[in-house]
Length: 378
Image 1 (cartoon, one colour):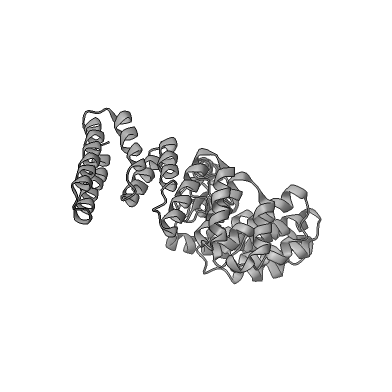
Image 2 (cartoon, one colour):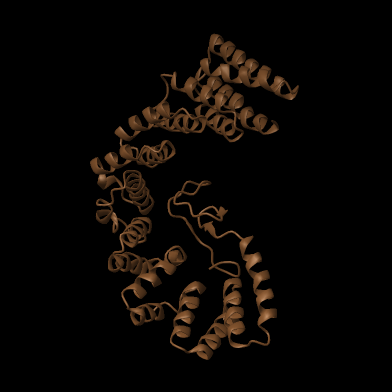
């Protein structure tokens, strides 16, 4: 609580300075002294560790003075970070009662209050604030409004907002967000006809093409699946672990193994070891066992990877019966190790998971969780 003292001491000092400078009358000076006394009383409560009483007393002074808006905004933010949402809401709501607030200050308070409401689960109130702010052309409100619709799973509202104000969805994150709203709606209704239109909404968009590929694969439309997943392999190879096995099946079903091998060959400079493993598998199917083993050895010398090591052991065990039992046991240990590791990580906040989330559960960024690379990754 000591940080609150350092936060609030300037409030009393600044107020006293302004009042003393602008009002020389005895009446004004007396009022000034009363305010300082009240602040002192609140700070004394804090020093005496009577925290609840002290904070309530300081908050109540908002009804007396509107000269310390920024200090109280900071105080409310501190409450919110501490999880004391009722107090944060109270400070912001009291601030809004002051006629002295400028329009920009009012907008700031409304935005912060919307944050409080969202964290408290009062989504209707948060939406009212954000819709009002967005009507005042506050672009930050749009981002937060989309996050609110994400939190409430109100995909239709987010899509309707995009259709009405498409020009405001100017950055990649907003476009990814609305594209994923379309994806959620498509999966919910099992209707995918609208997804094609938004696959190119932004260059690095993944999920719409992935879903369209999945749908085509289920319908045994392997050529269409190759179209969508092949495009992802070319533009977003980091996500290849979620579709590469099925992409290989598509090529095999159409007897286009050479095309698959050629496609993989274009991505051998990628950091993705899984692509190189699939390349080696293709070599093996062509009877080029030694070439496959030598290639994966070269890869692992430059780019150590536990899955690559496991694959190498499998190849070697198939080639040498004498050491097969030992290699099989070692490979089992490696596989057990792999099973303990996270598969995905958010490149924005670092959140890790064994499951792929399209919306990061931690920071709420869209399509920021990608398959891991490195020693334990793909």
